[in-house]
Structures are given as structure tokens and as C-alpha cells.
Image 1 (cartoon, rainbow, N blue to C red):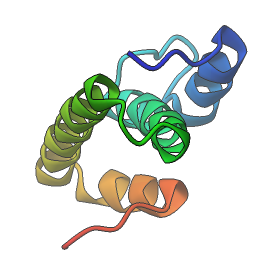
Image 2: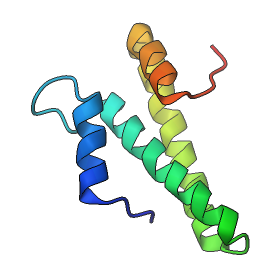
Image 3: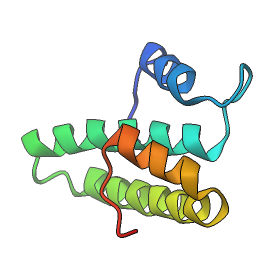
Length: 92
């Protein structure tokens, strides 16, 4: 499991939260997963044979995809803003 520091996690939550006490909305969860995915991609560039980490990465990518599908289905405008802010490619 990719470990991002508490400071980085707090910064991501502060940037994407919908209200002051929001830590679990879809937007925050997608942003946190994206941060962890980016961290793992950097790790795998150096350690190509780390297959356990690669599997964890694929699981996280699938989880993020499910969150994005849910957000797109429930709140399209929020989905568009989030994907633009995170620079994610979509098939919209």
C-alpha cells in the first residue's frame, strides 16, 4: 500500500473537500487515490520487477475508476471539474 505523508494527505483533503469537515466525499477519495497512484507510478519506474506493488496499483486504479463512474452518474458538473483539476483523461 502506498504511503503518502500525513501532510500531503491533509493538503489534498483541504484542496478537494466540499465543506470544512468533509473527508470522505467522492471528490476527496478520488483525489487521495490519484495521489497514491502517482506515488506508486514513480516507485514502479525505479523498481520494474515489484509485482506486488503493481498489483496494488491496479487495484487502486480500478477503485478510482469506480468512484469516477459513480461521480459521473450522480454529479456530472463536479465530475468534469474534478477530472480537469486532477488532469485525468476521460471518455466522456
